[in-house]
Image (cartoon, rainbow, N blue to C red; front, side):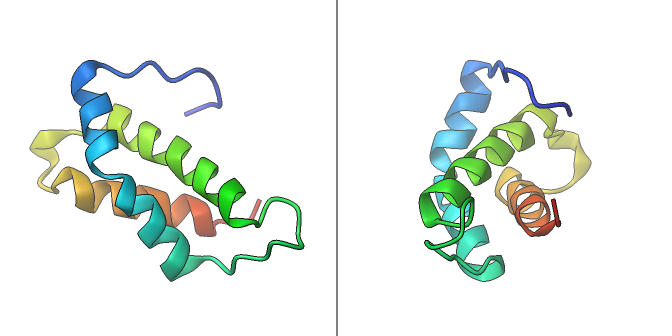
Length: 84
């Protein structure tokens, strides 16, 4: 999914709002926060994680077998840990 505006339905927005802890979990379990390094401060990482949480909501398939929190954890963790 390319970086562009993400339009969420009301249901997707509700899923994101209910699962914001996924972003905190992904940061605390996968990323070395470094406030001295541009882009690696907690706030920067949290914003990036929220973008990926929104992208997870847009691409989530409830018939895929995984719950949304599980799917969102995988998406957020994977993309926060990929080298840029």
